[in-house]
Length: 412
Image 1: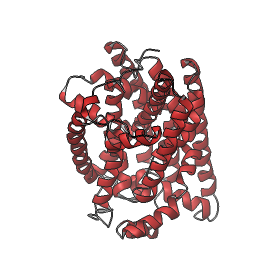
Image 2: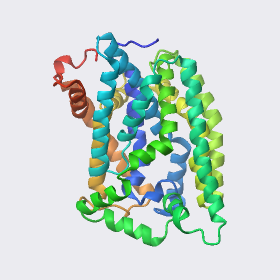
Image 3: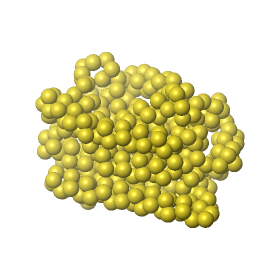
């Protein structure tokens, strides 16, 4: 074990803060546009010129990798929390499952009442599965994680095969095929018009639609993405135990691993992007090149991202301190981001939903980043935790936890 169990790891906060900021580059599309635009720029929001450049940059560098970083970090945090509970003489299983139960509740409330793209409930469910595997040695964590990633890739590969098979039918645009078109292809105008009308409407209408279409999404996500997420959590445990995420590797080692990983992954992503553009983002090309095949190389680039962050960061630098503070309050900032964005885009707020092209979403992202970086560090100079981190910790432990600044810099 190459990390201190009794102190907070700045390295984890830096990586988490970067992932928190980076994931909005992808989530902003779901906040601001109809759902199919997330995977397929041809569905809505423009796919030429600056809009195509915005899609390509995200596809090459960020899509899936920021979520993957969060999953790595969730696995690493699982180890830290359970081992700290053991060191304090508390039952690690009870501590962990209490945390996951409350996280599940927070996630469901976020999903149903704020934004349909919630990931917290998914992490809570997968975290419950990951707990018994935490004692595996690093080699077993990596090998089992790889098997799970391969299983996930095979699952999405079967989905792509089914879409290709159904497309050959005399009347493919019905039933399951139509659902795939609506999620990954270019939906009919009536579907787009319906989404625009709901999201530009009242809060009651948005919530009713959310319950109707996304009420059981945590179970659907568990079925589709749970294999990959669990694999990433195991990779995160291995990365912490090996010293990578603990920040204990020599700086030059981080540089070498970053360059190696990206040298492998980036050319593959570039080829997939070229195919998608050449195929004009057809349903089959999206399911293969955007959903299925990246699963095989995404872990490599996620590893490269972690190494790049820890190589490039200057712990005493102004920006690094701000990013680490945002990462330390990632739970609060994740939900704050949802509140800010739904206010900007939904009809019961500013009503920008569907009114910006793809590239025009990114000045909004920059503004949200500025807010998160501006408020997180001043808050932590006065308080030990972010407000929701404190609430989660207090609920999980069954008593109010100290939050004042007098304990802010002590071990947690």
